[in-house]
Length: 182
Image (cartoon, rainbow, N blue to C red):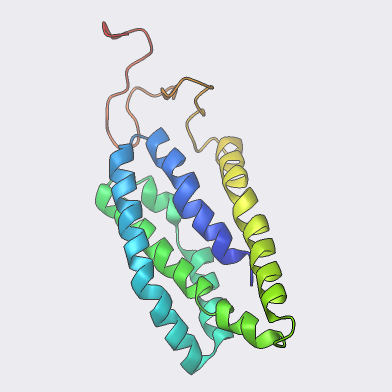
């Protein structure tokens, strides 16, 4: 089992919540899209599993990986449109499903029955740890390093301290202390 499906899962779920809300999307909108993504995977994983039975597990997994590398997730998200954000995340989920579906039967085919459970479990857990464990941290670090993201909020401060007065989605930002409600 490769780390790719787990890395993409961590990127399009946990990291994207933080990133999209930091550039102005409403968290409730992002959460609704994530629920739709989960529903999408209920359909796409069995479809990609069946496809991998017909044309080969490697072909389906590598095609998913190639598309994952080529599609411009952050460019689509930065467009500022909820519709484009939805398409970007749904595409990400379909690609993730293409990479995630074939390895399950492939792993069970790799091990004999006397070690199958241990072998599959070890491969799955190790890939999950490496793929999903570090991806959000690496993505956030790259965004900050290349000045593509708003400053992360400090502990206990959920406001965004981006220097621009209008976020990427088009909402007007207010500086801390300028509202009478604060």
